[in-house]
Image (cartoon, rainbow over all chains, first blue to last red; front, side):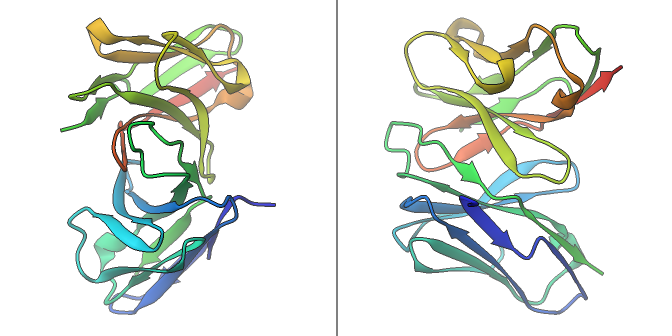
Length: 116
Length: 111
């Protein structure tokens, strides 16, 4: 039973299209995240949500819009896809928001997005 | 601002040899430190973490790491590597609300 699951695993699309990536966690955690891993494997946080509220938005272009319908789900919608959006996107979740306790984050398997 | 540096982009070791992966961090307060491993095509799996207390922490798969505040380091070690340890290793520092990752170290194992 996967703790953090993302769909789809692979996504190939044309420039200018709009696409969504879904994430669900069954750990009962309050906080969810999206990270982007570029072609050099560098991982950087994009967003975090705590109990459906946006906590972190790391100067991500507004073509990226996260949506959290409930605390177990955090979806990522991307409008007008560009070549530079090609990357692996990871969803993660943690119990809290790191209030001095360094919460452990659990990661999904990633979604590899290729924009042609 | 938080930052993490992993000086070695790629390391090759022979199976059965010992391993040390380096990690240096910059953080203004008490750091919460993590090592994650990413196998090809997979997500990130937590190997071990340091929050406080004993500076030598044990993790899964026979890995350990030592926190040295004076050197701002959190190096990962394993006494004898196995072919299945070939992967990408990420050090991360966590504070309020997010993890900041190093660039990763790719580990190759020679038979």
